[in-house]
Length: 265
View 1 (cartoon, rainbow, N blue to C red):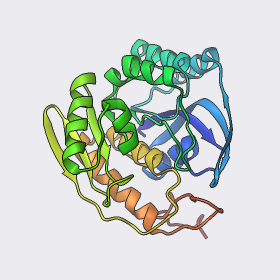
View 2: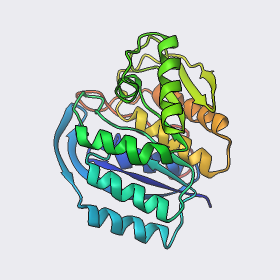
View 3: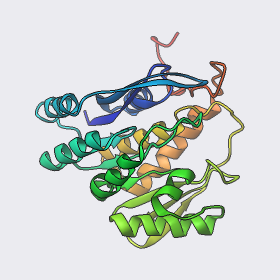
């Protein structure tokens, strides 16, 4: 069985963070492991509190994982401080981790800021150059590139700048601000568009976590990056189309929409 590791924050409402990652990896047939960077108190209406783990404890989690069940892919999500990012970069380098998917989580769907300015600098310096693929949404791509993005051409320019600057593939997600669900993959000087349909579902809590975890799962199973992205987008669309409606705010998706069998009833 292939394995995958999520390094991210815990979402007490279960819709995003490591909870979304583990659900996504599991339904993809991949054994999921987690190293928790922070506990969050949140629900569908917003984040009310964040409690970081210590760098030492995060390092201990990573040591225990890599020395026992080595992950075939790694997804990195919410990491809110530079000290934690440095620990992650050091451990991934030491253990020669591969198939690293970085979702540069900087704000929740509700708009709450989840990372400080110093951490953004460390992220750029230490973690992005290690990534196999980076999955920023439009606001995150604007921060990382320093460019305004309002058109598909802007997405291409920003993705090219980020990819060339940090030496990684970039999947720039268009659904956050532009009126479509088309995503752009920039890799080794070439742009490839993945076209999708916008789904009229206001419950989008955890979409970024889910997509990046699906990509990591597919990479763990040996798929090429382009196919890993394509299949991940199909899965995300299915989870949204299931039209789960929970909570008073931007609710979660149904990660198990395709699960069938005796235990579901």
